[in-house]
Amino acid sequence: MPIRSLIWRSPVRPARLIVPAIVALLLAFLTTGQSRSASLETIDNFGPNPGQLDMRVYVPDRRGLNAAMVVALHGCMQEASDFDDETGLTALADGLKFVLVFPEQRQANNGNRCFNWFQERNNKKGQGESGSIRNMVQHAIKAYRVDPSKVYVLGLSAGGSMTAVLMANYPELFQGGAIVAGTPYGCNNPTALTGAMWWWLDTWFGDFAAASFACGLFGYAPTPRPAQEWGDFVRASPDAKPSRWPTVSLWHGSADSTVNLANQRELLKQWANVHGIDQIPDETNFLNNVRHTVYKDASGNPRIEAYEILGFDHAIAIDPGTGSAQCGVVAPYTKDGDICSALKILEFWGVAPRNNP
Image 1 (cartoon, rainbow, N blue to C red):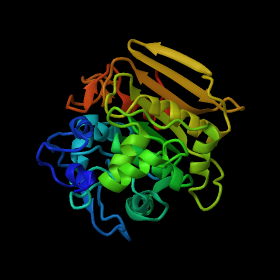
Image 2 (spheres, one colour; image 1 turned 45 degrees about the horizontal axis):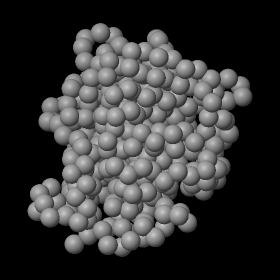
Image 3 (cartoon, rainbow, N blue to C red; image 1 turned 45 degrees about the vertical axis):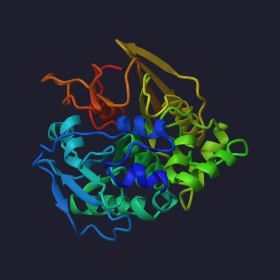
């Protein structure tokens, strides 16, 4: 039986697995939480749905015309309401008056509700899950009178990897994106040096086993590539070169044992190459256990930012409390990092006013 079936299709299986390390560490990749939000609306008629996903939305009262919109992608073993509750996104949407769209994975597609970012049938433009999410976004822009120039996407873990897919597939659709503990677009491709191992895993254990090896999951290091090669993966995805590429916010814990921290370095190489900028930070800030770097274009505009949270494992950072800069509820994969990552991402995009670095 392929390892993909053992891991991604059924939640309970015997312990006798050929690659036990992948299975044991997968538990860390699967986010859990209890559904508490009753505020998300289900939209059934958003258009073609090639990936068979569900669409949930939150529309704040008195938002006005031409509001911004954030597309939020949950992690494995989560539903949209879990990701919403644990990150505090609807509270931020109420205060800042932006529309929220939550694509939601179905268990029929993936036994642990992970977005299938590693499969070509789901990560190419117009196909599968990528195509479904694009159609949700286009529907919401019209239905809720969203400003098309203020559409953004963020995701955690498998949702972060799908965020990279969406920015590469539809750069004209998203002004910015945030990848939290995710992987670069195109990482699940063999190289001359790694091809034999990649093909062996893919053939005998399934596409996710090959992706774990190539993309730096569950104890593997990601396959390093030249910046030009990473950038070419992105540039080859859309039908035509966009007038501008999305800005990128990268978040990762230094102690992440599920998605290797080196993925942040590879993501930086990829998107710096796409934006035509170097990988030398123009700003570096430290706040408690957080290192924040900013990378600007020739005009001085920030195009990429990267947050590394020291000692932080596989999670999205929150700062529980009632203060104006606080957010979130502690859960297995929303952890107290003394920083509200969702708010900082919104500040980088210009959806929220910027406070401190």
